[in-house]
Amino acid sequence: MDLRSPNPYWLLKNGLISNYPSLPKTTKTEIVVMGAGITGALCAWHLVNAGFKVIICDKRHVGMGSTAASTALLQYEIDTPLYELIEKTSESAAVRSYELCAYSITALEKICRNFDGQAGFTYRPSLQYASLKKHVANHKKEFTLRKKHGFKVSWWDADKFETIMGFSAPAAIYSQLGAEVDAYQLTHHLLQHCIKNGAQVYDNTVVEKISHGKKTVSLLTGTGITITAKHLVIACGYESQNYIPKKVERLHSTYAMVSEPLPSQDFWYRNSLIWETANPYLYLRTTKDKRILIGGLDDDFYSPEKRDAAIPRKAQQLLTAFRKKFPQIPFKPDFQWAGTFASTKDGLPYIGSIRQRPHTSFALGFGGNGITFSLLAAEQLTASLCNRPDPDMALFSFNR
Ligand SMILES: Cc1cc2nc3c(=O)[nH]c(=O)nc-3n(C[C@H](O)[C@H](O)[C@H](O)COP(=O)(O)OP(=O)(O)OC[C@H]3O[C@@H](n4cnc5c(N)ncnc54)[C@H](O)[C@@H]3O)c2cc1C
Image (cartoon, rainbow, N blue to C red; front, side):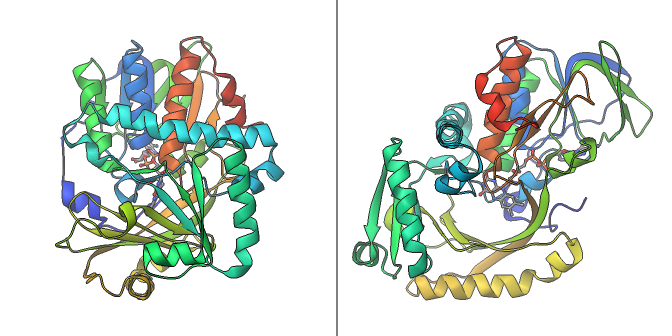
């Protein structure tokens, strides 16, 4: 699958952070993690810290799948608003899912504290404005529900919004908890920690066949080498669908651009993560090196050719939208890119096992909040492998 255009900003900024060999010979381990993006790296981090002997392998270079393209806003608000998720699941399941995503932001911060520069992790508030007047009623409903369930949110009416932000919107929810990170850098940091603690990481190692035995699982690579393990974690991002008989993902195209570094560090109120209620929505964040990142304008298709051909047009649209809101900020485009992403029927991830694949777990952080879901997958799968099954896993199971 072609996951992204060739030059996402994070890849150019960070370059090849570390080198990893390809798998040299047939080997055995306790747990093999297939996929070395942010999800596989977080799973490996938790598994290694829990004392497991772990091998991580990837057919690409480390972090060069969707992770390199990620704009990496960390929000507890998933693509499905709480009021809609309640209708799709139940009030308790929806609220718990939101609470877990909120928890995962703080858990990611704790992990990032271990690394120089904290992998770009910075707490940021999240500001979601109503794109149109007709969205206000549902937005208010969303605010009321979140407040009722203890999320730290405040309601901004149109006057307050304009006074603080300098452009107009009919209303907004201001939420204290959010963050931004550099997912590509974090992936390398996590894997370097794993290696220091005994794990083996191999890239350029494609798994072509998975065989499930009575007590083990074997992966056959493209060079005819085998990895045998007691357990397999599939963290292959949107390509994980290849290993699941039921269709669980819908593929979309998304676009992003980043400015040249700007002289000021403070662009707008607390450099919040800004997004909106329209679907598809536009979003904004800042970077540690004083840039502004704009993304969105998603298309409902998977066609790498059409996606990449649309980059100049989408970049122009993103720029026009930005200049309407912030005409005083001299945004000069520096890098543009596009990526594929997958959504699910309810906006929630799939974490856990399927009957057809014994000794195997899936860690699938789909949707706009893939990274917070990856953290949850890593914690829940590790707990389960330590014989401490997490009751919250039912929220994200394939049978939900
Ligand atoms: C433009 C864009 C913006 C985004 N913005 C956000 C955001 O703001 N916030 C957020 O939380 N999420 C965001 N996402 C989603 C987020 O980036 C993803 O959820 C996340 O990167 C997925 O990580 P992953 O490790 O699961 O997948 P990947 O990074 O794709 O890693 C999976 C790895 O599995 C490997 N693999 C696949 N098949 C095999 C095989 N057969 N053998 C060996 N290896 C294999 C691949 O090579 C790949 O490296 C965004 C995504 C895009 C594209």
